[in-house]
Length: 401
Image 1: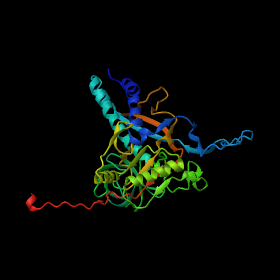
Image 2: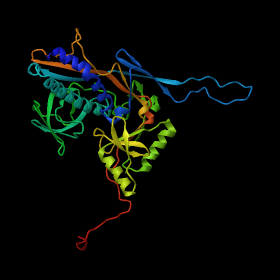
Image 3: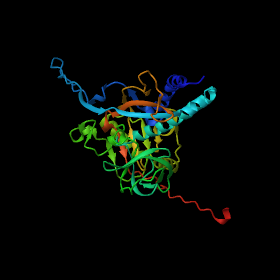
């Protein structure tokens, strides 16, 4: 007979390992390449010694002369706080009782809830990788009742619950996204804000403002500090960036790869970009009659290739933006892998106070650190179309039709 105990046992024993695998390796092509470690976690913080440059104890000398002076590695101390990542499912008491006599119906119930949790978690993890830790999704342009126009809806999708802030003041909280018009950048929410939203107010996932992991937006951002260190005092914290409008080409990519290899000893192993940039690169290859190589990427993904380096399009990369990354320099430091929050008796299903529903919460305490920011590159103004190098125009005349 199906019961709460049966449900908890299934969530712990049958679903948890599958959930961990899905979220760690199948959530996003970039995340799949980033190693995860519980090292350097101390209490609620991550404290990591990052090496700077080369060991100084190397030199040449005479047969009987002094040996080189021992100079060990130089290190900088990174410090950041573990971020709290949550995912929650809810099962009604009625649904559990209705499936008590049918194991198949019960499995279908849990499968549906877990699939929904995985889909939402993958979306948000992929988004956070490219964020700056603030959790900002988009800026308000205008609103009329339940319809809110944003500057972009790249980070928004149906079903999300969002808060909207004007500076540090919440203008609206817990708005459920009902529909997204991706042509007009208009989002329709379930409840109209109590007043007109201020232009340039910012939307965040519910409760997430300033609580998300330190993604690429922070590494390539304009903040004066990173991981507790002042950028101006540590030049190696500043990555390679270009905001010059340009067309994509093999020469552009190879020049950046060469620079990073020669100056930072980087080994660029993944390129991520917006879909428009990927199409432009495919257009470039076709103009030069080049074959488009497709390669397998960790996590079961496929990507086109630049000299063996996967070029992956990601919806969370801003239009016209491209990253060249050495994923070996990134680590997702975690207190533990994904786990269910347990009560005093080891229970993971808890009745929601005042409601006939039970909830279970999945949690991971982690943050992302890049050991070598200056070994990464970002282009922000790559054109999404390229010039036809041969100016070939084919016209079909009446005699040819």
